[in-house]
Length: 522
Image (tube, rainbow, N blue to C red; front, side):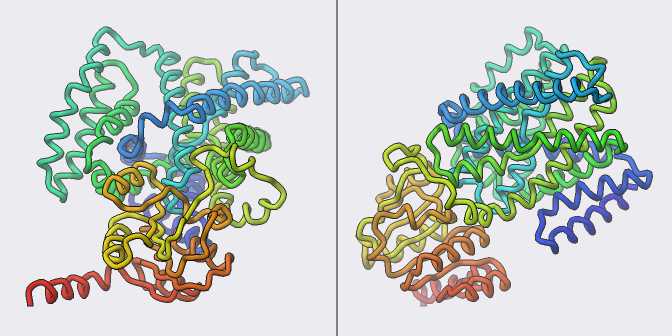
């Protein structure tokens, strides 16, 4: 049975990929189709799905700056949205009850508020997948969305812990000793190699030290994985550890999306209720936009963050499941929430895929706050007198910067989306500023670009380089552009857009190594 489920998931995911849709939509559809013909979730699929979510939260923690959660737009924004969405959805559901809809007629007000609360969350799994596929995890709107999701996850975990009656005992005080283990865990990471032992150590931290320890003292296991990741985030190899888990985590998350479709039997009544819940989804997205805009983010940032969070959450199913077990939520409502969550993914996926086109179409109808009032993470960009611009200051961008700076040290400028990376580069005497090169408004935010003669697209994600090249074309740039890519089809796409030189970082790594050896040793 497991082999059949995996085979159908592969075919469905591949078909969605060919249709320029995220594969996760195909996995959801595969789950529903399989359930309709008699398949159900298996212990293996369920276990792998749980592992996927646990590893996902651990990886989020590895990349999370705890200080960012203290920013007003994160903690206050998440709190405002949850409260306002719960209140607004409660009013709408009470309206459905007043209209005499049978599904809601027997529900007490407290039950309706609980359903509204369950629908107020957005999906961490979906959002992270969407951001990763677009290569925009570190964009301003990406970090904003992730911060909101982390706060929502904390709200959900607190609710589930209290509602399930699993109140931590006195032994939970042992969790305060975890920070004392941090130096030891750091030393172990220093001694771990770069191969499979690193992957195994990461799994040990996530599942044993994090999830296992928290579960043993009566706390939510997934919260433990998240906190362990946050503890390890300060290590210099935290990013490498996250990358080592990437493929394994992605495989397990396939099972998560499959499991949603396999776990519930769609019914006609459940589908009708789900469609009603789906009608409420734009209200949720609108509240996100209003809140982000209220914190003085630009229209583009507010819109993209809202689209990323424009869905219902798997936590809604978990909260609903607890309520169902407590006897305060009917089974048909739980089924409806399951269908609504899945349909919201199907609806949200293309919106995120084509978010840049949506913004380009709508941007003329909205105006940003005045420059002096724009949020500090969304400010205008000054290129100064630079003649060479490097977009993306990872390993390749940094190497290119150092090489070019040998000849024209004062004329090179790097653009990087990660603020902590910008600070590190500046500490190493590199001229690097914070900015999002995939932003359609990037060049309109630039205060001086007349000196730029050469642009290097050095972002690790090919789609990000492609989007940046499209923006360069729209601004009418007359200088030269070079770019990196991983695959032949990506090279061809970049050259078709007008890139003067495209460098395949895989194929040409060997020749670059050989040139280095000849220069140094021959």
